[in-house]
Structures are given as structure tokens and as C-alpha cells.
Length: 174
Image (tube, rainbow, N blue to C red; front, side):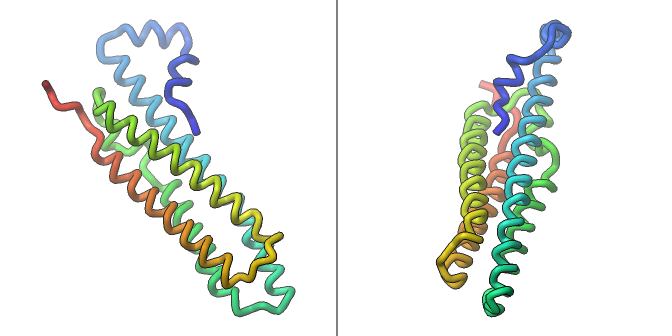
């Protein structure tokens, strides 16, 4: 996952000068948050997309073995994966609710970053499990429903991430 603080350390001299201009620092911070958000979502979507190759291999193995009964369940899993990938790729870059303001609720922003870290871990673990499918000795009736449940949980977290981001906005004046 992309670390927004890393962006701050890798800025050039011109940008450091521009950050001293009143209001410009907030604009740059907004852009870095937007870039980090985009990079994180892209990585997760790419990771899930790559894991689908193993699901396809698994499905070909099932067909070769004559186990056609498991195909509809596998197709539903593939469809749910496609849905999660689309939600990750299709989200508005940076979520306008988060990036329309120079100041954001930093406590809530930290919660979003923690949620993103957990989501990245869940996506990576799900992709690993899918990539182990072709070597699995477990019957499809056992493995596919478990993976479907994991995809559903990742999809729920993607939705919750959007809800969290909608709650970010300007901090209330004290």
C-alpha cells in the first residue's frame, strides 16, 4: 500500500518552496492523498485480477476431471471477484468527499488509513487463497463457498471504505 507520508519525504525543491505559499500546502496534501488512494485501489484490483488466472486453471482442471457440477459455483465466485475489482477500479479518484477540502478530520483520516491497511491484507490473503486453488485437494463444495464468503467480506469492506471516506470533510471549528 502506498504510504502518504512517503510522498512528503520525496518532494522536490520547487514543491518545498510552493508548500510555503498559504493554501498551497493543503492543495498538495490533497493531491498526495488522492494519488495514494488511487495507487492503493489499483494495487488491490490488480492483485485480485491476477488471482483469477488460478481460478481459471482450477476451473479447467474441474472440466478435465468431468466435475461440471462445481462450475456454476465457480462462475459465481468469478463474478463476485469481477464485482469487487470493478468497485475498486471504478471509485472516483480520491473520493470527492475526502479531497474537496484543504482541511480534513485527521482522526477519521487515520481510521481510513487503518481500514485500508486491513483491506489490503484481506485482498492479499484472498488472492493467495485463490492462487492455491489449483493445488488444493479439497472438494469444490468446500473450497468455493469459503472463498465466496471471503470475497463477500472484502466487498463489504470496500463499501465501508466508501462510507468512511464520505464522512471525511472539513474539521469542525473549535
